[in-house]
Length: 454
Image 1 (cartoon, rainbow, N blue to C red):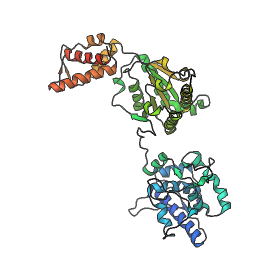
Image 2 (cartoon, rainbow, N blue to C red):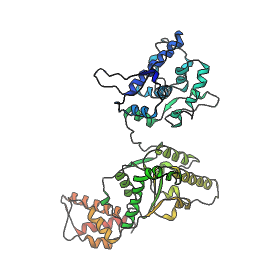
Image 3 (cartoon, rainbow, N blue to C red):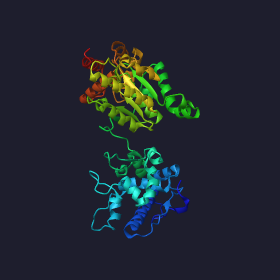
Image 4 (spheres, one colour):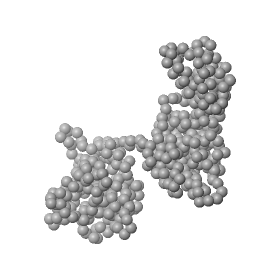
């Protein structure tokens, strides 16, 4: 808890508005740094600056966090050290230069340069110097602040960058978790973008549940997933089922392509307020030993403690059956599947795997799914409904268009039907007329079937 013996109330800015608590915290860090440098260079007694506390009226993310976490003044200083370069590039340089105008070595202060950042980045040594100077006894007492026994490090809000063997651990860079830093400084977290470091992309839809045509039995199973998303907190905590059940929920969607698996996952996110990320398997799977596990680890680490829905499309490429071990490749492929099984079981969110065939999936995964949902090809009456929903209001279907006959004759999925409708609508636009006839639709159907080799 913040020490009340050295509390300094926040002050208002020149325009009468209260400055964010992060500003006051950086002022505290500056005052602390100046006091320590005065003590070091001019041998003056070290006077510990007052630590600020956030005003109840300050609704900034950083203020709310500090009130909630009840950080000690030493912890607040460590957090400020890690955040300072992200707010003021030359934060430490501007202060130290007033004591070393000609430059020179200052090993006690620690710090390092980044590849692109030109200012000083704090290390554990920087924070330790500010807190304890060269007092060996005090340094030893403060060392636990930088270990897993410390709240900030145990919660992975702060970390020390690993150093080479034989170098002091505190010489590693003192870093704030990028997402926490973003929230503290901007009040929000930007959605991660598809990259080698994050092999998944955010997906969304403008469609509604009514646009999805599925049998009633499938809809009932999907409602079970909605129920879990809505009530998981109450189930695991209030009803104390967390000690009996594994965290998270695992579902398998299987069935032919184009039957609504991806759309269902996206709609689940839309109607439950969860972001949905489709995992890009081409970015995950690697021919190099250990790289697939590394890529998956980065994905699940990023998704930890989020409310995301992870959607693995064509999942049998990654979650397929384990083989007999004939060579080293089989051995490591099986290790990848085992690692996946472990990470998915420990993931606390909703994970959806999609496959064309249930039998392609490894038996170990099948046993651990909470829900297995079959998305069948649409029946004739479902296809008719899909045809009716697919045409935009601007399209004018002529009287000879017999959608019922087309739905009965051609066994197309929803995605096939949308492709046909897109084609005939573009043809109509090219003609400069919204009129669409039966022959136009049949040409579109023929074109779609030829694409499928039928």
